[in-house]
Image (cartoon, rainbow, N blue to C red; front, side, top):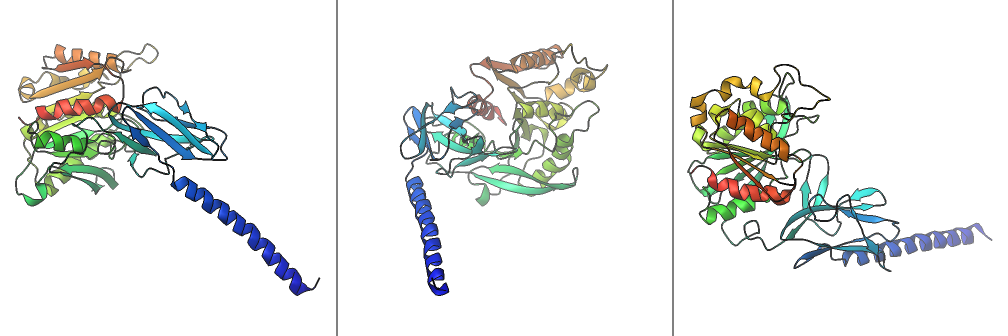
Length: 382
């Protein structure tokens, strides 16, 4: 065989091999592009992913009922894995686990951030109070600011009510905090805060307000307090509040400031709101309380470290209590922090605070936290 004939034969073989691979990849891509996921129907959602070579695929999601640590998906003859789940009206995070690798849904562009990963997001319509309605809309902005307290750039999300951009009015400010593992995106994506506020404001159930959704994690996980430096509290008081009151048409008196949070954010609300009670007229604690308030016999607290002892002067200040217009707690009966909530409420009542406490159905999920926002927001700035 001449060298010329050999090169022609080699080129033909290589082209044919890669051409076949390209065709197979193209066919798989076209097959994947036809997959409908998630497919939402009344009362259920079907999730699908093309993974013909996978041996095991599961669906996971923190709020989808019945999933737990994950639910098995089944594969059809075309290599598409599928599962159908019952789902009440609401908004749910989910991911696929493909042979041990967590992936978002490649057919779904809707996502929700947490502190260390991204979730796919599916909405099941039917709850008008958080669905997208044909009403004037506010805006949620992603804001980058420099934290002088932490010497680095940080991010927060800020909601402004319908008509803010064209007006000149000033507005009260509601600081809304997320839970452990989440981030400043969470309340506006899976939490639907902007849509909930729009619907409440337009219906006349809530006052127009600015809502500030901060990033609760500043590094290693922790709630602050005691002798440990509370980085989040420093950033919040020294940087976040001044930034908002400098760059937005925000009212700056105590009666025009509110703060609430879920889980970790509820603990942060207490760790900031009580020591700085002169700044806030409304405090909300969702599925949370004073962490460590229930004694642990295996880890006794050092003398003088309890929340009540650290903030004794505030808890005994009757003048500050008079300016607290609403101190609202809510926790589900199945929440693992329900005893913490109960003990915290009891502690504040023993110190003559007027506390409202609601204990209803539900656990530690976004299903209840969105409902708490709907109940709490209309009580603000009235």
